[in-house]
Amino acid sequence: MKVSLTTTTTWWLLLSLSCYQLACYANQIDNLNRLINSKKSRNPQRTEPWTDQSKVRNVMSPVDIGPQEGMMEADKIKTLPGQPEGVDFDQYAGYLTVDPKAGRALFYYFVESPQSSSSKPLVLWLNGGPGCSSLGYGAMEELGPFRVNSDGKTLYRNEYAWNNVANVLFLETPAGVGFSYSNTSSDYSNLGDNNTAEDSYTFLVNWFERFPQYKNRDFFITGESYAGHYVPQLAYTILSKNTSKTIINLKGIAIGNAWIDDNLCTKGMFDFFWTHALNSDETNAAINKYCDFATGQLSTSCDQYQTQGVREYGQIDLYNVYAPLCKSSAPPPPTAGVIREYDPCSDKYVNSYLNLAEVQAALHAKHTNWTTCGDLRWTDSPSTVLPTIQQLIASGIRVWIYSGDTDGRVPVTSSRYSINALNLPVETAWYPWYTDGEVGGYVLGYKGVVFTTVRGAGHMVPTNQPQRALIMISSFLEGNLPPSS
Image (cartoon, rainbow, N blue to C red):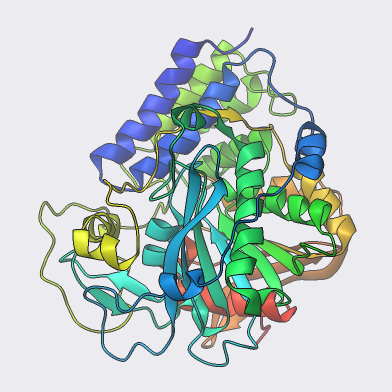
């Protein structure tokens, strides 16, 4: 018997409401749960590989390349309101049109490295959702050069920003996310994996025209969560469309706490609940008895016990199960300095900052009511991207999958199940890696994929463990495994 829409909706409401009441990452949970549960209610589910769905469209569709002369200089940011003194790198922001006829444009924020930017690689960062902002999360809360103070008006320096080791590009994709927009309203109701990959590719081709000095640079794509779809799909699109005219020098991908396979990720989530004392033995036994994760055909009893499992873990931040909650009704005064302890209320500060008129003007953004995640109608999402990852492995590019080990929504167990499904031989046995004399995580090297954990990090790895995240991504960019001592 198929899961009913009513019980499925109940499960999603429990997940999203528990987080909303606690002021944690409600929008990310809302968007991912809404998508997964809408897919459960479809009959039949889409199971064909994404590469088969998109082959003709991705390879044959033309790319609009607009005039870019003078646009790089126009996009240069003079200064961000409230930024600290001593900023020693260039930053840019603006729009690139990906469909002139529809008036569809994507917004980006780009920061160069303070040291030797001309020789460092280019890294693209994508947040997931689907429909969540790489500017709000990635740039302002995770790996960007600044964090927002609790006053919502000033910034402080992130000493572990990834632009220490690369030039980093943050893209708000698709249209309807953050400052990205379309003048054609139907674009907002026809979103999915295919057109996100296409628009992101068109963006990149035009961006390289605007920043021609990066055309031959080593290029890497990174991201987290539903970017487990975005990143490999964009990489596949690039490799499929690379020609002598539009070649992009893609070297590798790295995805964190990645939603890769619907069934394996869901199984991994409930196994994580039980192994981390968030569910009872009885609920865990019932989920394993009634839920057929191999086929995705979930019975009413399965859904009933999954709903009970969500109810049992209580009022916690599912994206970092050991983190404190945001309880303050009013933020404390700002404090000076560099990166500080994890602040569970930081998304509030970012929302306030990016809605300041002077900030939007400095970013060259259209005046809008900026939100962290868009309420998007997602129409195209395969149940798995494992076939796409297999094709990337076969292409020879670098593939890393990393996981913060305290994330309960797309946990380390989900990553392990997804990688195990690839049936890859092990080349480097499991070992602990280190930062400052402490274990930073664990790594296992397969033929074609490196799997690494980041100890003490939740869903947003660079937020919870910024130093360990920087060591990890530095190793990835250098083509080395994380340090064993």
